Image (tube, rainbow, N blue to C red; front, side):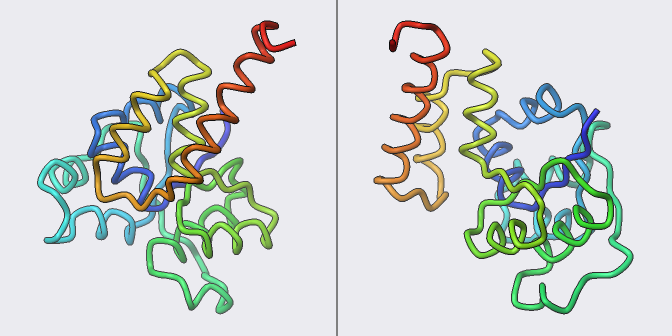
Length: 168
């Protein structure tokens, strides 16, 4: 099975809307760093998230990166450690939402995937309803640009039409 490393935000928002189990169904297991767990249990985190992070499920493993390149210093601790782990362990995916962190991942030849990409993958695997889940995310504090959401929904539906043969 592929190795997947996650930063804080995809876990945070999927837990917040009760869809975190799609991660196990899609990827088997997720590796996180101590900084990610610290961010999930921060006093400002919603109770549901900090409770989850205080006793994470068995499909979550925690590992500390051996060394984090100085070039990641402008990122927050969770992003730095997630990228460090993903690079050291040659992860198949690194789950990140922050635009700057995603650019760093791409420069490091890592494959970033954000929360909306995870949701789209889960919808394609019939694990959830894409539009309903995006609506749930929009009701959280997640910063979703409305034009981006519209484009992702349009792209998702276009891809689905192409896959089913109805869009030809």
